[in-house]
Image 1 (tube, each protein chain N blue to C red):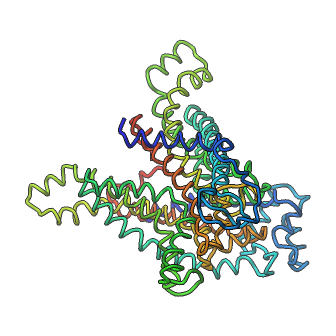
Image 2 (cartoon, rainbow over the protein chains, first blue to last red):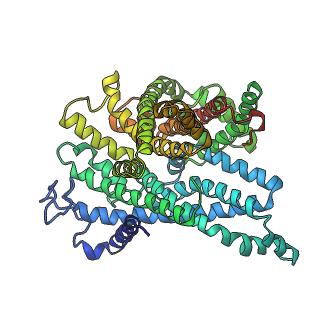
Image 3 (spheres, rainbow over the protein chains, first blue to last red):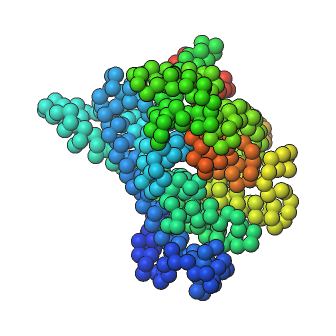
Length: 266
Length: 310
């Protein structure tokens, strides 16, 4: 493995570990309002400075990362599960079931994803679970499409044929013969999609549809610091940098995974 | 060609039904009286009564949906809770602004993306190639609401080259257009690079070289014509996603288009506005995809029109 690829994976592990053990790393409470140190620039005491209520931005970025990463990962897992289910069924069943499910997949894919996510987040009460549902209810379709296409190519392979010949039931063939073949694709797709989910999550947070204040989230912090961009740019800069680094790592990870499995997925 | 277009337009019908069904379900699940949600509390009682009759809670689901469709066809998307203005009229008013911004962003993204793609493909494997290619992955990882703020800080607040926000002429458009263009530019550069490399290895390029054509002519005539096809596809899809991005970009730069309108609706929980924007945005997105598909088949004579499978 190339050095650059390795460093991406190490960096990603570092980000995930740091957000998980956030309380150990930072002593300060992300919610503690400190009126004596409003809008402090970055310093030894406050690595990333403080925001308009004197809260430590470093610890807010770490705690916000828990939410962002958690939501994105869960949304990816949900998207993948639903996408697998629909894709497997559509690809294997064929016929009318396939055409109905494919039409549904095309319908969801033909929606501009952020607008659909906004629609869902508006209907449900704002919060982290809503963001997760919003992302997953758009995200499953691209998984389903790829899985369906792959099932179509492998369902007529000799080993599946022989499984059918010895009398395996349809469910058994799906679960033990076709599903395992799709797992590498699922992993690669997840890698490719996670960067986008991080950004969607942050966008919904920015629009005020995600994690509600005062709890920290990357998108929400940028939205709150917008008005102070000229005088206190660090309030906006650091949460944004966190989004960029994390999304970049996931995007690169997706490319690395895809190349190492030798798959051609967009 | 003509048959193909007709076929594709027909294909739109189930899609539009699906979209309106989805938005209808979303509207129905909003808290409160659905009729009130559709037209707003301040709508005049007569309209409200009509809509109650159309989508009446006691009639069966499909009758309600048909009523909703009838309303949409009349261009009735309700009245904003906040400004008391017709939502559809406001959308018509603001839409040209969004379109203008999207065109402006596109005219930045396509040429620069092509240039960068060709440039890096020429220098494949060099340091410059690696730097630019990594930067283009970076372009996909930067949220527009953050890059927009940084661009505003640098070019407007610090260097005072352009106004930070507002709607108006070209001067106001430059910064939001650049912000919107960046992710698309990155995608286009990436696609261009891979397809240039792919095409340069094809036999017909060897033939051209064997004929003794100079390099520049091969690049600009033979390779370019083949590269432009995937680029158009991606650019078209990106054009649709500008409608996505515009919610964030227009909000930051105070550009008075549909995106900002949507955002204002979200902040005030102005449901008729939000739903109206979602419907219009989605329909436009679908229409643009259709046009891209048609353009694609027009540009690429290798694709046989009547054999097209969706």
